[in-house]
Image (tube, rainbow, N blue to C red; front, side, top):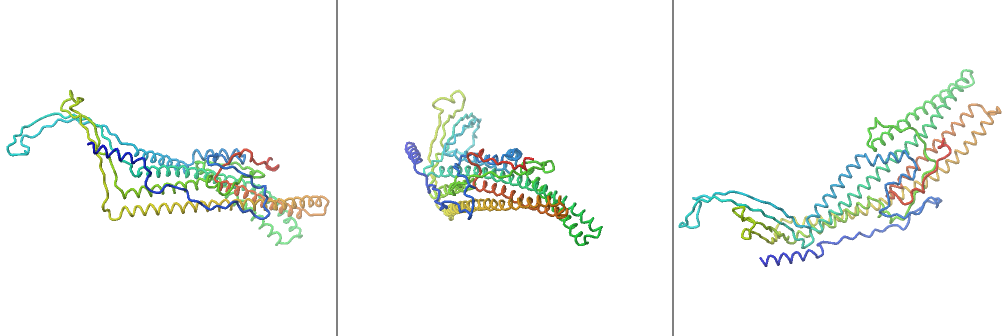
Length: 490
């Protein structure tokens, strides 16, 4: 008994040793020092950010200063079923981590047994001269049983480490789901608002084309216009009407998508027409290295790598003996309740069990190679996630820059067409231009405005893509609210 107790204490002392297997270290990733910028880009387009992993990433949409968008996103975060699935999986991962952590402590069970036993008078005897007699007696046995796996190699600690990192990965995955859902909803919302602007402009174009068709019809009736001119204008009006119906259909698709994202049946959801703000907010951009801290998908890939590293230690421990304190129990055993708690009734046992696999057909070696390959796979996935993150950020920044420059040129085109329309209107009042000429100039003016709104909507989508690429929120978003244009305030 003393020898067994000494071995148990020695094994327990080994628990404090370093766990078996490689200690986790995040691999070094070569990152660019800064982002590349397009030639001629506006240097004031970007604002310096001070990102941190604990920054509130779930409120970035407030920078748009749109109450309807804020209400939709809050509803999405509360009711979206995809997010609810992710939250449930996070709860599972946390519970599993807690269950694995319990293996570091002994398992203690309390039990009791009571029986009445009658032995046979004719039972076999140890010698032919022994005499048996039938006996009936009671047996009362309360007992506390403890089992404990001695973590002398750190196998259990590595398993707990793996499960803890898996739970952290699930938490990062949940944050990534939130980011993707809110970005998707915001994109759908501003695309819907872009369609609202286009529908408004195209409706005016259709009205002007109808007036122009009426003028040509009158000229045709008087013999001043040919059949070709009338047919061309009729076809143009029908084409614009078809485009208007397509825009309304596209708007319905985005409206239905928003309904689904907010957990609402599409048939029960509608959004009234609205306006786009004049300018999207200027989102802050930081160095590429900050993506390692800000992007939840990068954090999830890194935690998956840490969990896989711990699993290598678990697999390696299988090459060595396992030590188990079992059975270890303390209790009493008596034939009657009166002396059940007396000293003569006390029974106890403690033992140390060691097992070592001698032959398993190469299973242990295969599991070890499997764990090593799993770590290499997660390391490559981590590097790929960072590479994609840099690409997405660079793409989004380029889109924002290019759309800013294109929008500037289109704004100049709209201003020139506005001047042309004003000049033509004066000439029309003076009798120098016909109504048909004035209508054609106004049609060109509205067409340019429609293109302007398409570019403007693209700016909002590109900025949302930039937010998603950068990992979500930032400090000081309240200072980034956009202003409405005079037209949008009407």
